[in-house]
Image (tube, rainbow over all chains, first blue to last red; front, side, top):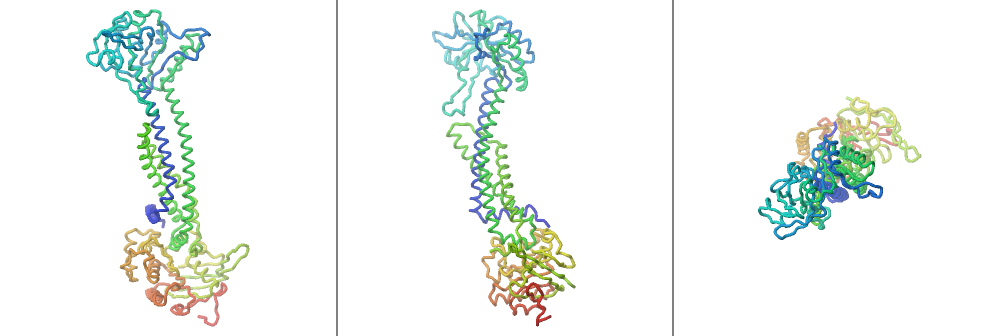
Length: 411
Length: 227
């Protein structure tokens, strides 16, 4: 006896097409609501993706960094560095690390010279694992090896900008350059690091250019041939996985506290911690904006409900006729329910279409990365269906509960 | 064979705090294939009686048997089924759905009856051809004359082969020519074996019926024209 859903859909669709102007007016609010949801989620998505790219460029999501704690008050004692013996001690305590690097900075020697040309570069002494902890690679030649470290070899690896500006672009590997009183052989050039901060718009540019201006020598060379009082100022470690990185971060924190008699001289941070912070921020940000969108959808829903209530009133006689020829209350209820949901869903789909168009234009204008994925589109449509279901109930109930005798008397 | 039987049918309405008795114990019996006219002044309760016979309303007390089934105690959704399969309505003001073409209007009861789209289309076409509207199938009701609209309404009423046809002043909105045509159709349907119950206050229309039931003050009026 019941009429099928397909039948109800058909009635709903023809209702909408016979009342085009009203239908368009009805869905206007929902279109705006869905557009605002879409844009906000796309911006958040873009921000997250952009930050992840940055994390990837800065060593990946499994990286753990040990650096000087700039908030530490050194009047309480202690030194902001580690001896080679201490580094070795730490290294033995974290065998689970996939890669381990200790770093010294040659602040006193930063002028690279080649055939009368000078280039000022931040020179660091590092271990072979540096390449891995920084997620970096060489574009030409090779990186520092264990043998270089053992022999304190007079070798240097240049950042891409340093190589280009000091020597040029051809046959850089094998050239001899001088640093302080030492002559070093260029054994490799690093890949170019690049990250465009789309979120900061036109102020962007390559935010990692400073890395391309750096150069690297074996840590032993730095200590033995330049300054034997130098100590290790930072460590970089790669864990097996982003989750392991969190565990390793806690462990290293404890190790360093013990090593420095409870003094918080070093700060241990992990990329994963940063990502979690970013995700927490994104969650708050999106909750606030989704709430705002929800308010606009609530208003849209109330508008739809009122228009549908007016429609039920206007169509009282039609409802009476349908009941007289055998429609049950549930048939009438479903007819109006489906009509409301169809209208809001249509609004959702139109909202996505318009939203994509708008995003395309504003993201180009603001030079901001905005990403719309299937998940966002799906949830936008889902939201509009839910609005239809929630705000369609009252009009549909009113239609279904009409008394046929009264309904047929209505003019 | 008896198709309609009512026993002590009572209907009360509440108008604010006042209780109004519209039907005050109606006993009628109508046989299958009969053509009956129900007459009475306005406010007599004839519309209420028709709504109850048409299962659009339920009596406050008393019993109503349709096709030997006690329908006065049925649930509202069960009554929808009864209206759909056993009753065909023809109204004074046609009551066609204005945004549907006449074919779709005639299909409506068959749709709620669960007939497939192709079957009901064939059936609706057949019926509309029978009332001379074969060339108007795609027209909307607004594009037809009153007489044509009432023929569509009759087609819709008989679509599901109901047990009874209930007509409420079917010629009330028509000129005498169109009204005559409509009454011809009712005569034909009666000859084909349909049970027809027609509410009217026009004695000329009522004369077409085999029997006249007069209602006055919620009671059957057995005055001078006792049948």
